[in-house]
Length: 283
Image (cartoon, rainbow, N blue to C red; front, side, top):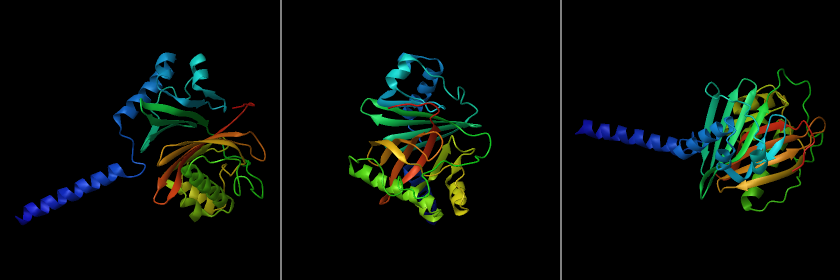
């Protein structure tokens, strides 16, 4: 009887642990529908199948290539761009689920791709496709917000439409302020464990531990706060997708995608993909 009780308790603990893992914020995305949609997206884009790809795109979809050129869904349908990573079979792929938002990140050498999926009444739709090509060598200079960092540390040209947007923008300005102050602990409190940052101005992918270490050593590693020109947020309850453009104190402007997730009483940034805009572009 005691042995049965012990076994039951062990099984119960294992089940509880499994449930906790599956429900953990940022757990690896296992939704079959998301996986199928993402696979179909890659295949359709690879084959330049406009009809198949169009059926997978959100009304607000944007495609940003490695040169920083951003296209709408309608523009993609007119002239199909090529995938930066055509074959992801050997790429490192990571997937995360945040309720109505799912993220797929693929990397192969210096080439990195982000796909953000959102759940609509009709099913999962692609909201963002963005490419980043890292530098071949460490940057010699890091474009930033200047010495005073008025924008984005103290204020930004953005009018929040929801309470979540206001909270996210507050976390964003706090995060950028912590970077300027090289406050590694404060910065770490504002990002998720799965955090990843990539920029056309950097030669490496920065995870949470690496970025924190860089800040503690007062090193920006090619990524620094840059003045916000405009931003658009898509609010999905416990997750917010933030797309924005920035004009640093020197160098090319940046197109940036961030995903913010509510954890506890606050919002944390889980990723930041920053693509340098090589040619003048409007929105």
